[in-house]
Amino acid sequence: MKVLTIILFLMLVPCFCLSQMKTGTFSDLEKLKKEDSKPVIIHIYTDWCSVCKIEKYNLSKDKELIKKINEDFYFINFEAEKTKEKINFLGQEFNYLPNGNSGIHELTLALSKNKNQPVYPLWIFLDKNQNLVYYHEGEFKPEKMKEKLVEISAL
Image (tube, rainbow, N blue to C red; front, top):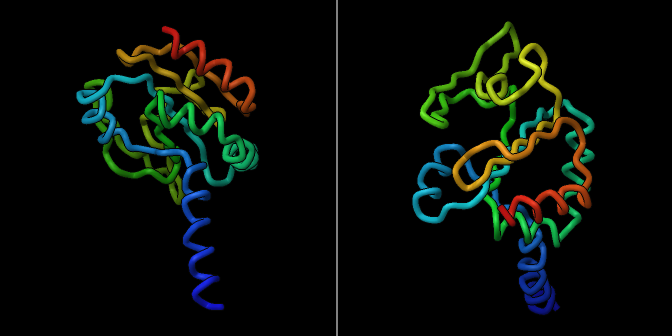
C-alpha cells in the first residue's frame, strides 16, 4: 500500500509543477536576453498588499496564461520593499532605500509613474528591445492579461 501511495504521489507531482510560473531575476535577464530575446514582464508587489495576494491566486489558477508567459516572456517577480540587493538594469544601478524599519527599492520608484507612492501591484511590459510597451497599476485580471500578452507577442 505504501508503495502504491508513493507511486501515485510521484505521478501527480509533475502536474502541480506544470502550472507554475517561471520567474527570474534582473541579473538573469541580462544573460537570457543574449541567448534568446523575448519580451519582459516585471511584476512589482509587496507582501502586505491584499490585492497582490488575490491577483497572485487568480493568475496561478489560469494554466493557459501561465503557459503563455512561460513560453513567450521573461517574468520577473519583484518585491518592492523587501528586495535589498543592488540591481543593474538598463545600464543603471539601483539600490534599496531604507526608511526606519522599512524601505523601498530605487528600481520600484524608477519604474513607477507615481514616484511618491507607487501603486501595487504594478505591471511593466517591455518589448524584446526592453522598451516600455504597457504599464498597468492595480489588479490585472487573467482575461485582460491574456489579451495584452497576445498584443505584445505580435509586436
